[in-house]
View 1 (cartoon, helix red, strand yellow):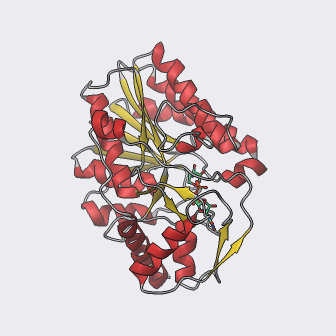
View 2 (view 1 turned 180 degrees about the horizontal axis):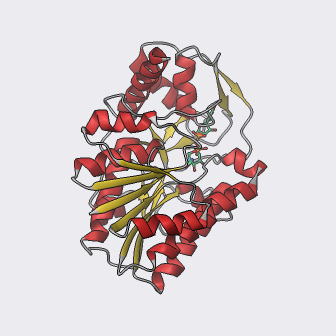
Amino acid sequence: MKILVTGGLGFIGSHTVVELQNQGFDVLIIDDLSNTSLEVLDGITNITGKVPAFEKLDLREKNKVQDFFRRHVDIVGVIHFAASKAVGESVENPLLYYENNISTLVYLLQELQKKEEASFIFSSSCTVYGQAEKMPITENAPIQTAMSPYGNTKQIGEEIITDTAKVTNINAILLRYFNPVGSHPSAEIGELPIGVPQNLVPFITQTGMGLRKELSVYGDDYPTADGTAVRDYIHVVDLAKAHVIALQRLLNKKNLEKVETFNLGTGTGSSVLEVIHAFEKVSGQKLPYKIVGRREGDITSAYANTDKANNVLGWKAQSTLEEAMASAWKWEQKVRKAK
Ligand code: WQD
């Protein structure tokens, strides 16, 4: 069974390729290499001993997408990661996001609808909930007006898939990630942000390595236990395993609806200060940080109600925040030593 992983050399994509290979799937990766490098292919191979097939492809080129599917008629499932994902950048350059995150999804689905049947796993995000009223957040929480074009592309993407699945042989599962963190325990693959990290954990590990002077904590005046914002930090390997389980659910026709939605989190909220303390504990070093003003567009709190993922999907996150931070730190040290 050949599985296509778009964006398969990215952070979550590469970890998912490893888990797919571990389960015996024949994996084909496409990636435009805009936010990653071919070295990730070696990292994957070093872990699994199997070299995944790879083709460099920009999904915005419709004719190349059509040609690709003509050459690979044996693809039975797609896990679609390929997208731009920087919230701030999406505000500055919305059309880049609408083209790269929406047009590409349409071209992919236009090819999949030609097949007898197709299983489609979509990388969505808890960002579709905005600031949810009730914690923990269930899949029935209302979708609120997106806080950024990036978040809007996830909402629109879910709608496009839902409308398409209704009238085609495509079955889909929408996976709404909370905050993916950490790295594979082998330290062969991990998060490798280009430039100044926007996300908390890579900024912490780079500060720990002395690459950044200090972490800026964006606000300590939130209505939370310690005043800093709360998120649900989920280990990327746990997240990757959920993708394989979701794909197998569709391939084995266990899905109850044409489109199913699952929140993927640990179910536990952690504040920024708690993440800092977890890092200090696992690294044995103090992290230099300063409290600054809130970041535009940030919400106070988001963490998942994981009942549906646990009971229906049959998946549960295994790693703790400290284990995730330890893996992120091990990866950062390995990457910097290699430089
Ligand atoms: C986490 C917390 C910040 C950096 C975004 C997207 C989401 C997903 C993950 C793509 C917040 C605080 C951060 C820093 C800080 N992206 N922070 N100092 O914003 O929850 O989610 O990234 O799929 O869709 O919305 O993640 O890691 O940026 O921030 O204090 O230097 O850390 O304010 O409270 P976020 P994040």
